[in-house]
Amino acid sequence: MRWSLAAASLAVLGSSVDAISAGVMEIDLLFPRENETYAPDANMPVVFSIRNAAAYGQYLAPSITAQLINTTAVPDDSIWASIGYWVDPELDGANWTSHEPYLAYSFNKAFRFEASWTLSWRVWLTGCKADDDGVHRGHTGYYVSDWLNITLTTKKGGKTPDLVAATADGRACDSTAVVVAITDKLFNVTEPPPQVATCAVLDLAATPTHAADPCKATIDSAAAASISAALVEYQCNGDNAPASCPPKPSPTYTKHSAAAQGLAVMGAASFTGVLGAVFVGLLWA
Image 1: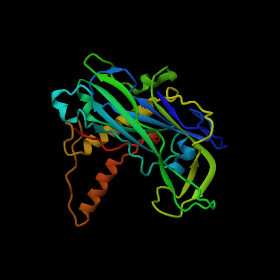
Image 2: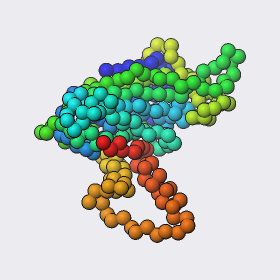
Image 3: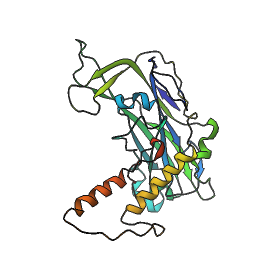
Image 4: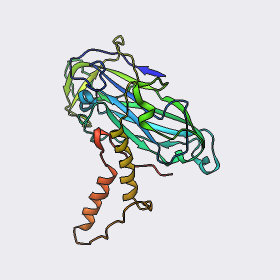
């Protein structure tokens, strides 16, 4: 299932690794895959790719809202069956030029259950619009997609989650993607909220010239290792650290220690991995 807006043209640097047309941003759900059955795993991530992020991320400030819904309603999870778990990647403060494409990911312990799941997601971009006199005084946020959905299953005997194998060689998949068109118009933002200092004007009416291809982007071994390291980092800095974590050093209390510890916790929660992959706080059920 693919949903796209129109495409326009703007000559800017694209991805040398996974090139797509200039003048568009494509957001793909890379993992998990549609209609797959995975072994239950509390550490299984949800991974998105943002292509042309290096060119347009600073102007559009993309964010992704994602919800995981258990459609089986196992007893231990029944309270969440209709409410769902939020698995939004945290993209505030992202370094969009750190890697192309940009990987954003989240975890949810709910995948430990055997169940059928619906993963729903949509994209929010900060876009400009010009006033009648051609002067831009602020910016307007656009939901550029409706909710997009995939279904999957977690069941004993299913595939072990493997980010590299699942996305290798651009293999065929039935996944979801959003493509948004961007004009060559940029405006300085003169009114709050200041998500961006300079924003781009989206083109919602042009004829599409770029077809979404969510199967094209891949997750290599370095990116997969970064995602795993982010999970371990967060778990080991939490209050209920696994036994496999190294022991925490005994705190040394000074009059400045509380502030220092607060910063350390904040840093762990906003851990940034290699390849521009941004970690978000886990939603432990």
